[in-house]
Image (cartoon, rainbow, N blue to C red; front, top):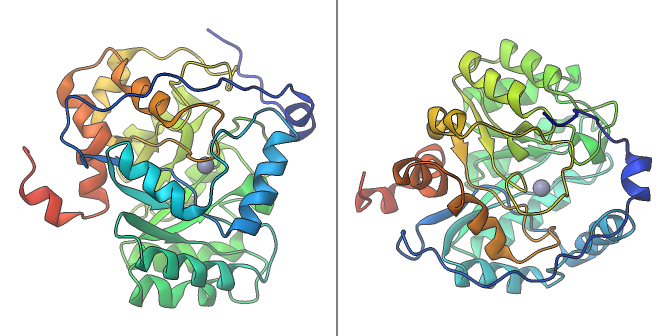
Length: 311
Ligand SMILES: [Zn+2]
């Protein structure tokens, strides 16, 4: 089994830039066009995207998809992705309300978008920055990125936000795993504390909880409203070198709780590699369809497409 080393930001930034180029373009043969939901894509205003891409490129990997948000949305459709989450996050207090307003506007002109808002724990009233978007503008939940915003998901200042999310049946997406690097604000124990406190809260843990994949899979047993997304986990690169090897039987067992995700556009390889990484998994076709589409359709309540699905 590989080590569970957790690089810190400095080591991450000192790593070499990886450019995997473009893998072959491919389409999903076993699912009709549009029958893929990507549960992990990011859309930011161009200025913020630029800052994020500079961070990644100053560190370990090259971003293969530096394009305006409009073109990114089109590229997802061209890859057969019918719906995709719109995830973003803020670095500092005072930024969430404006970003949520941008998200709402972008999502309203892109029917593929599944918008999520964000909050910052240091805001005087974090809930106020996102509440109207959740209740009136169709946001499905919020995304938090403790690596960047420097507060943990178990921060007491977030309690009113998380409790209202649970009451409204909204979803929390939180990158609290330790890949590709760790800081003081991540770790699955923080998430376990939140799930103990809000057992009804539906949570998506990106990257299958990497680098603590096995622990994340264990948590599925204990927390029935926890889901894992596959972003960057099975791709053919060494981007997450401390990932342990997974027994495919575990993926099959938990196929109802795993969502396809890509982390597009912040990836150093072609989008098709994300799709191919799931196609290559030695699991049943039934499990693969759950991962690519059915689980997310259920979780995100995508009813119009469920009607004619082959459930
Ligand atoms: Zn991401």
